[in-house]
Amino acid sequence: MTNWSANACVNRIHDVDARFDWKDVDSSQFASRDKSFMLDLGSKGAGDVMIRVKKDSSLRIRPGTPRNVPTILRMIRGLAKYERLTRDVKATASRLRQHGFGRQPYFQTLICWQGPNAVGFALYFFTYSTFLTRPTLYLEDLFVLPDQRGKGAGKALLAALARIAVRRGCGRMEWAVLSWNTPAIRFYKRLGAGLRKEWILTRLTDVPLRRLARSGKAKWI
Ligand SMILES: CC(C)(COP(=O)(O)OP(=O)(O)OC[C@H]1O[C@@H](n2cnc3c(N)ncnc32)[C@H](O)[C@@H]1OP(=O)(O)O)[C@@H](O)C(=O)NCCC(=O)NCCS
Image 1 (tube, helix red, strand yellow):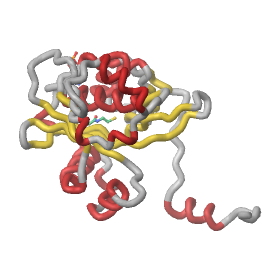
Image 2 (image 1 turned 30 degrees about the vertical axis):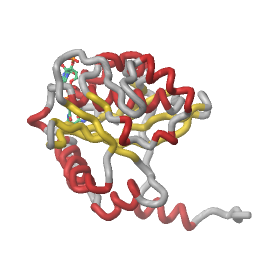
Image 3 (image 1 turned 90 degrees about the vertical axis):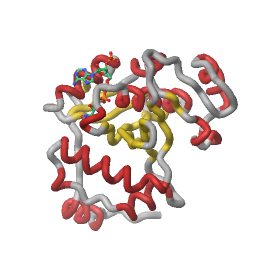
Image 4 (image 1 turned 45 degrees about the vertical axis):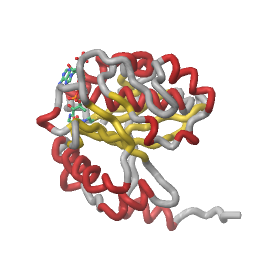
């Protein structure tokens, strides 16, 4: 796995090909200073922004809702299959519903629609950069259905994420890509993302995780 950061990506959001429905976004999560940014991109009304269109497109991007959980699950499985990691998927609809749309949401989603059909999705959450003292938008999943690729959905999703990152005052967008996934790597490079090969993804799960949780000599105060 390789870490990517996409500071440059946010400067290229004029290129996207989809309409992003801000009316579906909880606007209270955005600071008011961000409005100037919306205006920069050509606000068409209180909650609806038409991004400058490069080519004719009927793609639409909307935040996922609890009704979209089956779609999100299908996309997660599709991504896992593409990444040859199907055996690792333990995802369930009920946990997605609880963790994405419950009392304490852990993630958010964007879904790209072509007419009534979901063609792609992105799942993201926020981490924090102490070096920048700014939040980071962390992209966990990006997936476009195989027969819908190359039509702008992936770029539109990333552009919408970049807009959210800018609005939320993030210093970075960041994600990991498998080292063999050269089509995706080419795609990210073209957006201006930088490869962080010196960082190694580090993971603790299952037995070692539980063993560590039980250990430790210091007391919680
Ligand atoms: C990677 C992925 C999300 C890209 O989405 P997409 O909808 O196919 O990409 P787009 O149509 O938006 O393409 C955007 C740009 O990238 C270019 N591009 C797309 N696929 C490319 C490829 N394989 N190689 C080089 N460039 C590519 C397009 O030409 C386009 O450039 P342009 O704007 O200058 O015309 C999609 O192909 C996918 O889901 N792949 C499988 C899963 C995956 O790899 N996910 C990412 C895991 S980190």
